[in-house]
Image 1 (cartoon, helix red, strand yellow):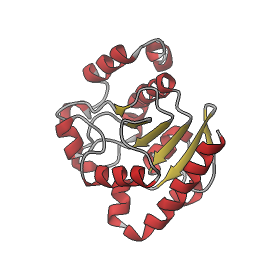
Image 2: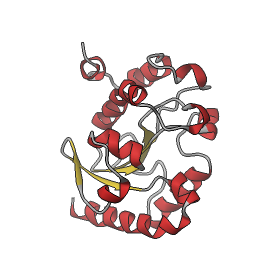
Image 3: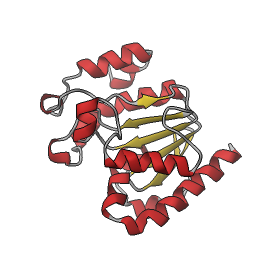
Image 4: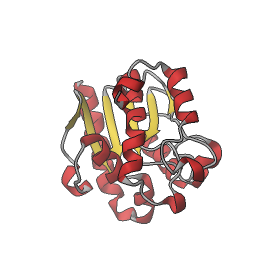
Length: 192
């Protein structure tokens, strides 16, 4: 039985329990708790990051540290608010040690959970935040620069790639490009 068959019929409570109980990769042993996702479970907008950091691991909610504050400000800039027609999730549900990028086998173990979240939410638009999220969802190894500014397709759902908020904190000169991506997302949503 493959992962899609395993998780394909799960509803929200069952999926959350599966994630809570998961020990399929080594990440679970090193984190405090899983970080499932948060927001409107029927949202039009889905924002996907790579994985939880220290603050997220402690609180059990994605994007609650400094990067989360920036994401909240990015949402406000396009007249959105966390939890209001917005869902936020990560590719992996457990914190990688020392905030390293998740490894390919860890992503492979966790991706079916995200795929099921997407199937349950049925968003109108997915925003992939950073290279890990965009590459996991698009099934390719490509740079953010090569993926930005193009409307991609995730199983029939439009997908836009932008920079991860943590990267923007380290590279504030890229914020203008992220703003372009958010404007592109807003324009795209108005056409859907």
